[in-house]
Figure 1 (cartoon, helix red, strand yellow):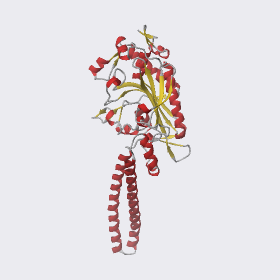
Figure 2 (cartoon, rainbow, N blue to C red; figure 1 turned 90 degrees about the vertical axis):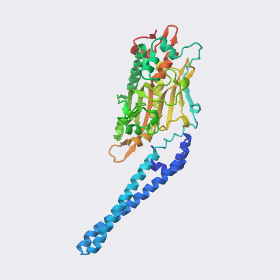
Figure 3 (cartoon, helix red, strand yellow; figure 1 turned 60 degrees about the horizontal axis):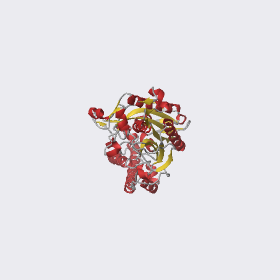
Length: 424
């Protein structure tokens, strides 16, 4: 969440920047500032009364020593009155803070200055397109037909077992999933990321810490009896490894990678976007997360973008990198680069990764700070994460772009994991 002091001192900047995200913050910001001023006034009044009570309490003993019993009793009555008034003020203060907390979490993160204005993905800026984008060819089979032809994925039995959006991978289809997971993890480890295997369900504090709650509450699967959420991405449990921590500056950057299943309700999705592997409720993804010093977090972001690009190059997939406009930027992100792969049979671009810098927005919620050696002062870290990579649309693009009369070619980097160079 945004820093309250920053909001107070930079009201117009906050309103102007959030307008880039198409978020009208004026009324909310003004209400937050008024409520914060009220909180300060209540605290000041309580402190003044506490100081007055402390002074009177010291006088009572002296009055008793001097035999001024009547004055001492009057002083005691005053301390009792002040104690009640302070208790009332403390209650008001707590209620004001609670209301302030509810309001401030409704403010999205501020976008970086280079985020372009815009309302939807149509306004995103294409940063780079690879040179190997093929021309669309008529007669190319889409991945859902290829998956059926080569018995790789059974969408119908997934519907029987669970429902739409929960496919069953079989034979070489399952092996392709495992090959991609292993390839991504191995490449991430080579790049200095430590592998972790986190839980697939998280509590409310974890969902709040990374900003999924309360903003994305309706998109997450919820286990009501246990008050736990199925994770929408490994970003949530991995980043929360460091919640409520002060790390030593020498530990930074902290770099983790994790493979998990991910669960998303995807409420409101419909049409061609949900065909086959294009949009699922359960899918596999490998994630990278960094905890960084603020002054180098954008260098870290550039490095993560380069790393994800390298994975797509090794897979031989045609790709493009886009910088998200304000209207397409997530609630928590300050700057995001999306990676999209070209689907030859569908003649469309499919998003396979988002690489984002959240600056200190998540760190404020997580209470995640670092401390320089020998110093008492602490500083908020910056958090970053990226898909490295999400599997469903990678699989879709691999199947469609590598189909040939003999079958489906397996990229060279996956052949050892797959045990074959061709799906027949």
